[in-house]
Image 1: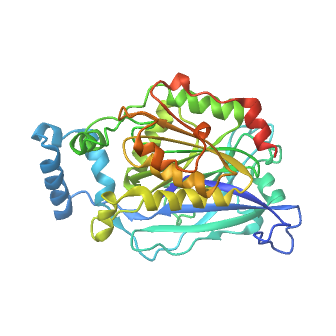
Image 2: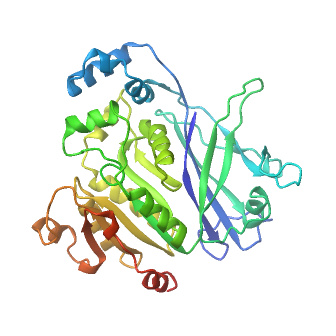
Image 3: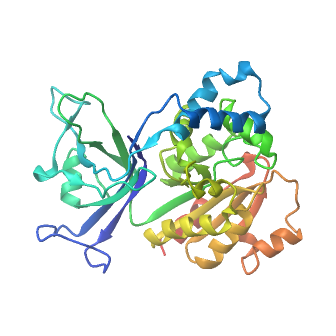
Length: 376
């Protein structure tokens, strides 16, 4: 099983969205989304041979490349058996702050509870939400953390495993306060070099080569996290099967903790066509859901000009004019800001709100202006 990182939000009890138990009277409820994938590995099968045959035609790779460790890692998640109708329980990992065990972690069941998730669907995925009061969350964090601080913290949870099974399946959710700055970022050709416009090179970069970062983007995001307390969300057309490879890449490259929002794809049914679908409608829906979940936060949207990010972000900026602060697009097509494409994409959006860049060093924020907007 795999857990995907999510973003937790705090809902004041005065809000109509709050759902509270009788004993939850501390002023706010934390809604912690849990998203996971249950599957069994399937290394040798007709499906694997068929998938490799398809890739061989698309990539034109030779036998030596077929045996590469990168290809084996990237292909493996596409060939698993998804476990349908499985139920998972999770419990939180509590930071232990005793003087003789500082820095270690122990499992606890909050108030004796195991939090049960809905059963998994045909794609093996399940989604649920755990609701905790401020007091309960502080207890999990060790009692010494301020859950209202600007810099996002993370809370960890683990799947309940049957006795005798020593595997550990752990997930994280970062805590985004009610106010603050959030960054919604694309992945391919925005923070990772992919060559999306050349489908053959895209496939080779996806399945045969180690991922490479766009120079300077990790440092930029780190500075936004450290200096501005920004929270991050990666929204991409990449399939969930690439999540673990992407997560390892982001960790190694130094990108901040983020929630992930990828595409659902199964080789067994028509969802495989999602890989070829126009991302405009799906990305607008996903990004809108994130912004609506944090109605008092300010957002920066970061993408590139290779596919549909200008059109997606222009629509989002029109839908949420009071929350979208800036749009930054890495210019991989060499187009000019005054081109017909951008005029149409950002119709009705102030020219001062969006810009193109090729040099990451030229992406600058005015912290005083941003602070004033976040304080509105």
